[in-house]
Length: 241
Image (cartoon, rainbow, N blue to C red; front, side, top):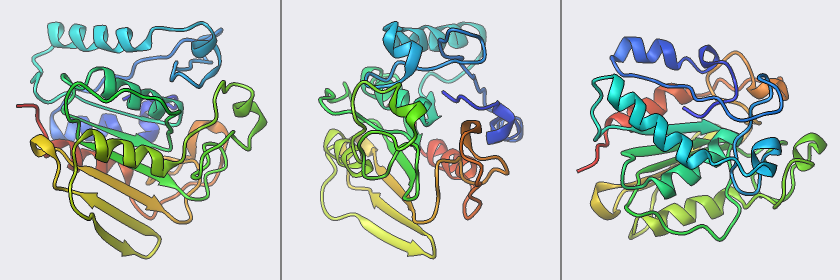
């Protein structure tokens, strides 16, 4: 889980204990221990400007966890929010032959990405009121974030379309709206993969279902759904052949 917030805020530790899976929380590069960032290509801050090799770092972390813990190599998942979600896109592309599924919350892509080595089931979740990583793309409205971008964010639709193309999804998606939440499901995809898109009409830049909003920037939590529960239900359906 490539997260910038404390693990307890997203409830992954409790979920891991309850369901019996291992979870790792890697820390990004920064000028201080409290200022970790990830190199997502077009963002962010120190990790980007120092060209931190975060893909190799995550690959090495997977190897180390496999070496030291009895985990199933067919069931390795990655998720992240915000800058961590941006890195999650890159990991799923670069390590597509090792990842069973991935999920991005309030992250973005930057354009020009190569297709992954293999289909990767992907879940994308994003609030339409996000004022840090805007739903329609572009530079961040928040000056602190915009200063730490080298490229504008692509829209959330760009990311969803990228993964439906990468996974060879065919036919029209199923679309279901319940109140604030619209779920778009692309199920007819290669090798049993799928792409699921959660569009949250009133959500800002937060991890849905937590009392705390994200990264100490935006203070309005969103509780219409619980992202941790949804992501784990998604992950547990998938394993690599």
